[in-house]
Length: 551
Image (cartoon, rainbow, N blue to C red; front, side):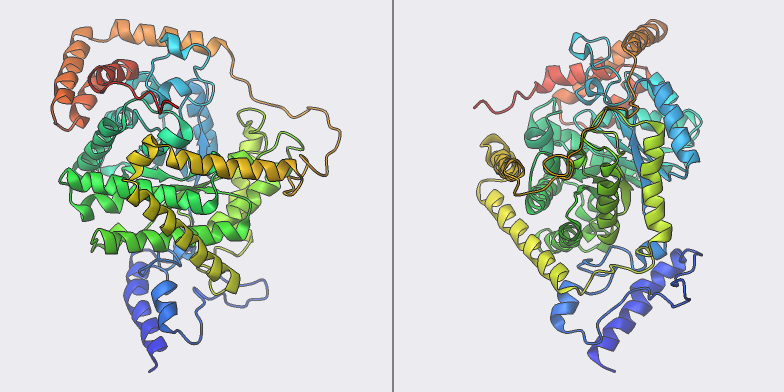
C-alpha cells in the first residue's frame, strides 16, 4: 500500500468513521441530475508530504479543508439571520417569523445604547433607542425577546461586546425561567472588545479591565455553560472599516492570540477554554480571494495554537467561524443588484467552509430590512444549500492552482503582520500607538481612490448607472418606540425590589474592586431586575471609561 493510500485509509478509519458514527450524513441524495455519485471529498491520486502537511483531509490538522470530516454532508451550516429592531416584542415577532421560514438559529442585533451600556432613559440614548437593533434595559426585555422561543433547542448569537457579560447573564436568567439549565444553552456572544478600539467604537472600559471581563466569562462558562461559545473573535468589522483580506485575517488572529494569552495568564487551562473560541469573518465579493482567506485562517490558527501555545486537544486548534456578507458592499443605487452581490458572498462563505452564515438583505443600504427582503436573503442560503451542489462535497475548490497559491499568499501576509504586531509589543500597544488603525485607514483610502478614478468598477455606482426613482419600500422605526421603551423601564424600576437591586449593585462594586470573577455578581443584579445601565455604571465607577487615542 502506498503512503497516499495509507494516509487516506487512516483518515477514513479514524476521523471520518468517528464523525459518521456520531453524525450520519444527511438523507438528501449526493448525486448529479443524471445520477452520478458526488464524492464525499476529492483527493489527488498522489499525495506528497507538502499536500499532507498543508492541505490534507477535512477534520484533520491543519484543518485547511474544514473542521469536520463530512462538513455539510453531515449537517448544513446554521442559517442565522441577524435581526433586531425597535422593541423586544417587535423583534420577537420577527424572530418567530424567521424560524417559521426555516431559519435554524437566531442572531440578535442590539441598539446603540445597549451596545455601549446605557439605559433607554439616559440622555446619551436620546434619538437612538431601537434604531439599529433592539433595546434591552432589563431582564424583563430579555424575557419578552425570547418569549415562546425554547432556549434548550435554539442556538442564539448575540452581537454585543463591552457589556457582553450583562447580556449573557440576562440570557442565562431567561433560560432559568424557562427551566433550562445554563449547561444546556447553546450560542455565542461576540465579546470581542479589542477590535472595537480600532475598527468599530462601541467600547466602554479601558482594555485591561475589558480583558478581565472576557476571561471571567471564559472561566464561568467553562464551568457552568460548556456548550456556549464564549467569544466570537471578529474580523467582520475590521473588513467593513476598509481592511484588505490579509489584514482582516492578521488583525483578527492577533486579537485571538491576545485573548488566549490573557486567559492563560489568569490561570485558565488552554484545552478547556480554547475549544469554545469562535470567529466571525466578513464575506466579501471577490469570491476566490474569500475562499482562500477562510482556508488560510483555519490553517494558520491551527498552527498557532499547536506551535505557539502547545494545544493538544484537536478542538482547541479548530477555527470555527460565522460569516456575514459584506454590508459595506451594498449600494443604495439599483438595490436589486445587492441580491447578486450577497449570493456571490454567501457562496464564497460556503465554499470556504463556514459554520454559520448571515446573508444581508437587498435594502440594508437604505434602512432596516423589510420582511420580504429578509426572506429573500434567507432563501439565498437555502438555494445554495439544496440546489447548487456545493454542499455535497467537502472543500470543492481544493487543488486549484490559484486557490492553493492564494491560500499560501494570504497566510504568509497575515503571518508577517502578526510578527510586526508582536515586535511592537502586542495588540494593545498597537491600539495605543495607532499602528493597526493606520493600516486599515491606508487600505480603505487606496480602495476608495481606485473607485473614484474608475480603476475599480462598482456596478450602478461608478458605471452602468441608470436614472431611478426611490420606490423601494423601507422599514422605519416609529419615534414613539423610544417613549414607550422609557415608560416600560420606569414601570420595571417601580415594581422591582429596589433594596435588593441596591444590595446586588453594591456587591458587584466590591467584587469589581477586587479580583473576583464578576459573572455571579452580575447575574445576581440581573435576576433582581437591575438595569444594564445601572450595572455598567457601577463598572464605569470602578474601571473608568476609555477615551481613545488622543491624536
